Picture (cartoon, helix red, strand yellow):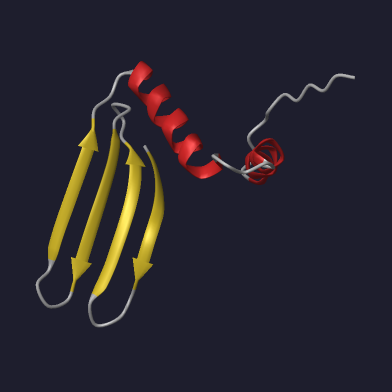
Length: 91
């Protein structure tokens, strides 16, 4: 299971949002709020590999659309996360 924190606010009313890939491969986003009126909200997307591919493309579109440096920014991002990408340039 892999997990990342998307949002954290700590004070008298603390909030956390985490995204997790479960052992089944589902994407799960959980929001916890502590303080006056504690609550937890959980969203689980049990998606097929095809749907995960569509989700990845939709996220890339949201992040990079209109960015003329999208390719360079993507390579910089992947390298910062130690993700190996192959790069080809001609000529």
